[in-house]
Length: 207
Image (cartoon, rainbow, N blue to C red):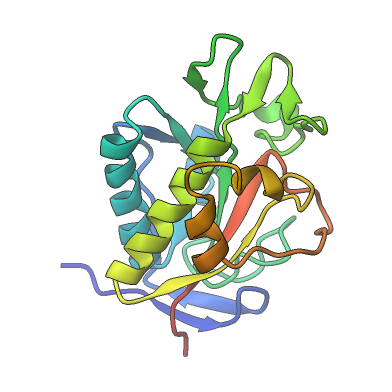
């Protein structure tokens, strides 16, 4: 059995020992890029991996018609992870924003080299982009699933970074009360807009 991971320092100045790579796909989720996987950009702390996979399993039952996509996480040994300012100790994960198409069907946000693997996408003030709309119910359900699994594993979520202008829409979902009570959202605008993805930092003790 593989030795558990150990994180060091902070998300902005740290490293990782025994990092593990997230699965490339599951029943209801996929990675953002085969290129990113091959480049080693989807490594995390082993506890983070376990939480994420368990949360997706929960969502397969709770939100069976929804599909999800994760994005960049970090390197096997952590450390500097350009162009990100954090993602250094295995506790930071980007998730692509869930969307629906014009028919209301859950679909994956397109991620490829021409749009910087999705990071170049810009939603308008109403959460629309090229016929797709942000699926706030799916996004909120995912955050709740992550938080519940983090707690079940003895940890928690430190913070979630998502565009402050879009955050109020999450509170209008059936998960709004839980989010208000349990999830710490960053209220400040980040150096890059977090609309096409949301950043989650996990609260796991480090050396």
